[in-house]
Amino acid sequence: MKADIITIGDEILIGQITDTNSQWIAEQINNIGFEIRRIITVGDDKEQIISVLDSIINEVNLIVITGGLGPTEDDITKQVLAEYFNSELKENKEVLEDVTNFIQSKGFKLNNERNRKQAEVPINCKILRNKNGTAPGMWFEKDETIIVSLPAVPFEMKELVERKVIPELKKDMKLPNIIHKTVLTYGIPEAFLAEKLSDWEQNLNDKIKLAYLPSPERIRLRLSMICEQKKKAEEIINFEIEKLKSIIGKYIFGYGDKFLENIIGELLIENEATLSISESCTAGNVSRLIASVPGSSNYFKGGVVAYSNEIKNKQLKVSQNILEKYGAVSKEVVEAMAKGQRDIFNTDYSIAISGIAGPGGGTMEKPVGTTWIAIAGKNKVISKKYTFGKRRLLNVRFASSKSLDMLRKFILGYYE
Picture 1 (cartoon, rainbow, N blue to C red):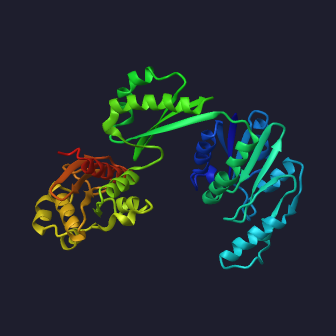
Picture 2 (tube, rainbow, N blue to C red):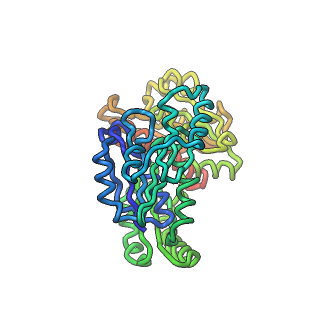
């Protein structure tokens, strides 16, 4: 089964917004057995949209379209699709009800003609009712191809894909069984990881497809297999994962679609432990990550963004003498921050980070990217210096994920 994804919008073409929808959609439909051939972006232009549809409609089993369904003049997708499938737009009672309820839930009345026209849909499409916005999804079929048009607002689109599109595809199409298992690693660059896994990869079962999916927060190793017997395929993949553990076990922090903050939460709950955080160069990003996990209030007490030396001194009890002697970005200061944070918040563990995120502020001794991270526990404090690079936002991401990995290893007793 083959699928193409089309995103529509001038704002994507000129870089005003980043297309994250296609990536998410591709992953979801690949998981149920579709091979993604390509992702295409076109502007809000009738001829472009029709040209792309004409070029692919007989080559794939599924086309997923996002964008161009809003109430403004440049949103032309619905009109173009109605014409393309020889249909006409007509107000739909159920869609009008959805639009009315949504508008009223926001404290407005349906007295705007543009919003009312959102309830007009092609009469020959299957309607995918949208409870989270004003634009319904639309499902068309032509010969052997299904064409699904969805709103571009991510939470609206995702709800429709999960609740409507995927169940319908599974019901209407004979899809192959596809198994994905993802191994999550951190702390080793992709090239070094590939080198370590070279022999294992060369001897990998030829039915398994391996993908390296890197980011500053993790490298995912995704093992995929198309199969007839799901249980047998899982056994084969799990056997390969056991081999992986013996080769790169210390770099594996989890499985599936988790991040380090999820693993930290599991470890803290398992150990009935609490955490607090003091941050300088990351400006609260680590606290944000920890607090993004549902249930984090059970173990995360809070944190301090200590950007200035005054706050480090007055709030975290870092002595003025240490600050003046060693500077804010130093082993001595970051360890004092971790100890002070832990004592003040009365937590089992604390993280402290101080660094030079950039682009300015670096020196020959401490260039941009220099970062000290400390972890404090009941009877021990550890710290480590990193030099990440010159790009500010990447430095924040690297420092945040590195601090979480240090805490993970600290809790697991890797630092003796």
